[in-house]
Length: 442
Image (cartoon, rainbow, N blue to C red; front, top):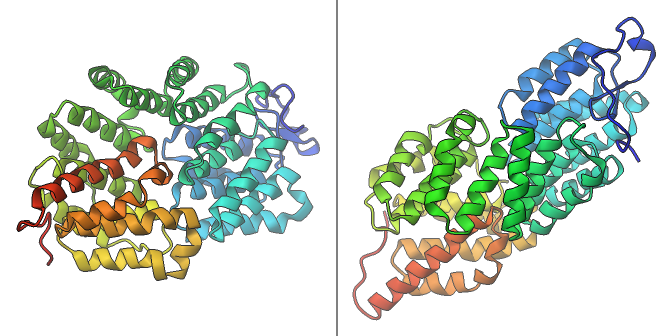
């Protein structure tokens, strides 16, 4: 089974003979390049991907510039686009898929299967892509890149048990002598947390940090555990004490700040939560979609606490307005509807919601389960915005039992239940009386 043997190091390879012998990466997997320098650049890029450092593409471009036929480098480049992208529109992804395919047998089996998995995602079938990356992991259990992508797609698809079980199946092939073991433990810890095994999740996340102190993902797991267990003040202390690690991390700086704001909300410190929004989360026009999602989710929580956030919503909705949303995940579109509703732009909210019903690209990018949840939910959010709380309650009631399939974490999906409670209170208070809408239609 590929990758099951001891890791082979390349640092001592004699460069004068490397062209005549196959090279192996640090986890013992064969790679299609004769160039040890390109391989070293690949390892740096892989560490960046796993660490969410934000410079992986620059690093792998250097490797591909030295060896354009480096199939594993193109695998990493393609995977980086899949990990970052919410819609399959990246021309760079297509270029790397095509480059591997054109290599034919000069790329090995594992590399060609990476290309096939990435092409499946590029074609809009995230579920089948997760299966293909997962099959790679079964046959090559030390392929941490395939594991990373499969884990991310499992998360987006709300396959919570797979977040745990897919990693558990490869753990016997890993140990502390294999580079990246700390990262793999971090993935496993998140799967345990999302399936409710909080004590083991925290213990394994802490072990991950012992092996890889810079693993912001493991810090994030522990924050989740503390949120789920109601350890609010401890959660604040945890994130503040680890701030130097996550605050500059490209993948987790915004999201860990979001968790810090949630802890402040748990203490009813709305002013402190809003300050975190203003200082860290408030997006710019160029911010990634994930930032817009976190910003929207926090503002919505603050709004239903009674804060006047008109200016904040207008600025946030302006950022959403500039983004092409057709073909996006339902999870993203729900947040866009939320922002447009809260900013008093019901027409824009209706247009985004309609994508879930009528747009071919959007419907093909989402499963029937995704649409079953998202369509009633976006209708509920719009009803909530115009003060029709009874309608909001009725529509959310249709999906409360499947709220865990929202496409985000358990903590993120909780927004559905919070909105349901506020809508129910609004419906009780109105009960035939005149109601001031949450947001007047514009």
